[in-house]
Length: 309
Image (cartoon, rainbow, N blue to C red; front, side, top):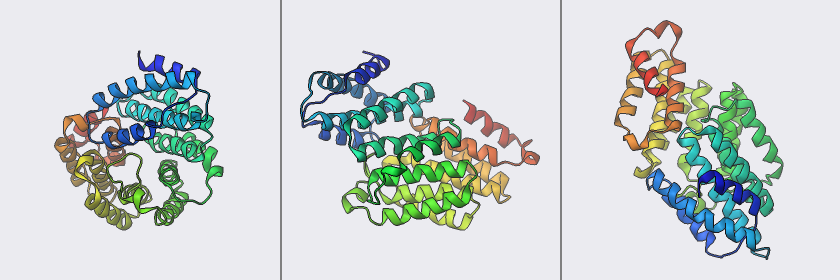
């Protein structure tokens, strides 16, 4: 069964059954950063086929549990589609993930699904105003309790506000995020290898993005140093994205050749298997930072061609 057929089946089914699904979801959160993308997506398709069948036949008390699992697994499908540049298909899966999470009536699931949608909205080509609007939908659900979902939502909102040029609001949001992150349970902060955790490096990554766009390069540099010290070896792509923030900062402070050289070196060092639309999106921000007067440089043209591919 193809992913689109799966999506329709899951949307039409909406029901749930088996206590092992939280463990399955947790396992996917760990393998997301550690296993090849194609392998994860293939197995995920098989598991979702089973889950959508259970949703179709079970109207019992376990329904909310499995609906929550379906929402989380749909997030991973959407993330994979964004990373591979399939923005249209990803939008459909984000819609399905939101619908299933809403059917679960689990506030944390509702926030989590929209949080990942908002975070990825800064990479998938959507206008920043649309991404901010998604976060506005769910902000009323926040009750002040710190969780991976609420921190993720604030992180995505801060990044989108930066892209919208609303830098004062972005800085205020990332500062609110930092206060909330201090309240996270240790189990969430220490879950550094999982998609479902919210370790410190995510805060520092967000600070790097926001302060770089706001031209506060001292704070951006501090956040970058901290993020790079924290990232586990398995997350080399995310390390590269933070270092691309540094390349953009170099260019914006007048060190254009150095910034272009750093960006090119980073892309060269990153294994081919780790190149995806998220990396290209951040690299395009480096290209955009180059002043018109410097765009005759061969290094600019070469980087431009690389991020177009």
